[in-house]
Length: 309
Image 1 (cartoon, helix red, strand yellow):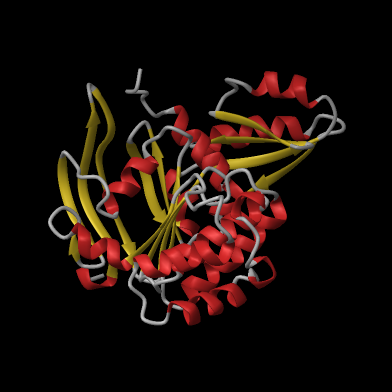
Image 2: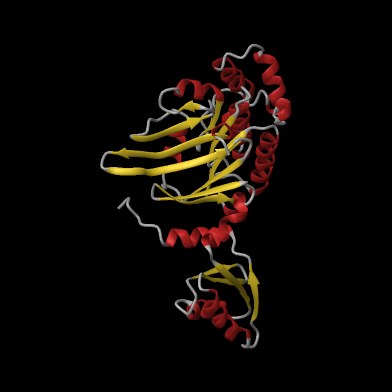
């Protein structure tokens, strides 16, 4: 892709707070119109990185562009064209839904604030709650209001920081349908999360831990990039089997998934030999499985060095 095909193109971003390096040599390219999943545990540096991308925080070193604008020298231009939804609800809880959206519309200097707000209330099904105080709404409705506010000025890029943290599964599903709807309109989206079931909805994924990027690739290519092979085992006495498999030849990772165990490793021959022996045991069913994002993430995290200590 040429530089014009990227909504975000940054390299070598580094940020220190005191003697702690919170973001370390971070680089990423987000194609225009894509949903880019930004995965990592809490405290991994995702929020600090997002703030550098939209010009709210200056990197100590490194640089690049967002929407073609320099993230250091042209941060004001970026802010006008980006919608940023923070992890914590950042609108006014003592104002109504309509008042919050009207306030945001005026901040952006929109020509027809009332018309834009009315349209947003309908699009996000907030019209019946137009006069409800934001502080009285559930977490899911607050997140829907926050997304409406972040999208009110029709930004070309949405930065969503843990947008579904603390909301119920149905609200999360509804929220993701709306994210996909924005992407279908050509909006580029960078969304941070630690929910693996959300990550599968992304076009591209970057894993981050302890301020460093572990990997980034199209979502469909993550398992191939990690080169991890996986088997699924079902049967009785899984706890004992789990302990037996730890450190077995070819087994680099054992994880419990409900009523099954997933065993993974990079040495396919050794792993297959270990699993084949299990297949002969009564009551055990063994199946080859596709390495998922969760197995890949756990594996990458196990090899990541904690430089935050």
